[in-house]
Each structure stands twice: as structure tokens, then as C-alpha cells.
Length: 124
Image (tube, rainbow, N blue to C red):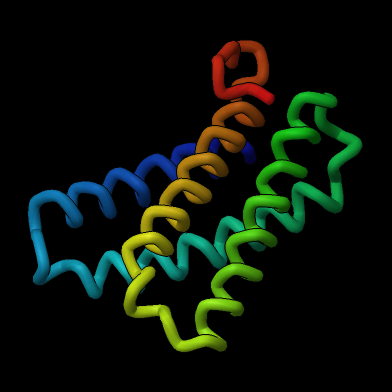
């Protein structure tokens, strides 16, 4: 199941990056909508992973906890910026941060799908 999730992530992220790079401004709204649903999908899957956290190694648990800390920081910061009405000034900041969270969870899904093949400097 984890390998299917990893391959689904791979296809979706590759499609979004290709759209973002080659389609330009015309596809930006499609990418933003797809990015929103990718984020919801990743949060749902990470909730399921967190509920079953004891099935994973200590390294994977730390990675998932770091993901949640990053998500909490992201959403708290987003609420603060939205309440003071400065979102337009930070739009690209939040797009880049959302992509960073998505790509980090992609790395986690790779680590869970192939636990014996993951030695990286990105490990925590």
C-alpha cells in the first residue's frame, strides 16, 4: 500500500511541476487547486500514519513528527498573516512553503515505501 501511495505522489507531483514549468500563467490556477487537494490528501494520509505510528521505525516517527511541526507552524503563520491582511505580500512565500511541506512528505512516503534503500542527508 505504501508503494502505491508513493507512486501516486510521484505522478501527481510530476504532473504539477510539468504544468507549472511548461504551461505558465495559464495553468497556475489548476496547479493551485491541485496543490490544495494534494495538501488535503497528504494531511489525511499523515493522520492515518500518525495513528499507526508504532508500526514504523524511530527515524520514521521523528520524520512524521517534524512534518506535523512544520504543518502546525505553517498554518499558525498563515492564520496570523490572514488576520492582519498581509497575505498578498506573502503569497509566494506560502506557495514555496506549501511545496516544501509537500516534497518533504513525498520524501517520507519514499522512506516508508522503501525503508531499506533510504540513506540520505535529509534524514533527521
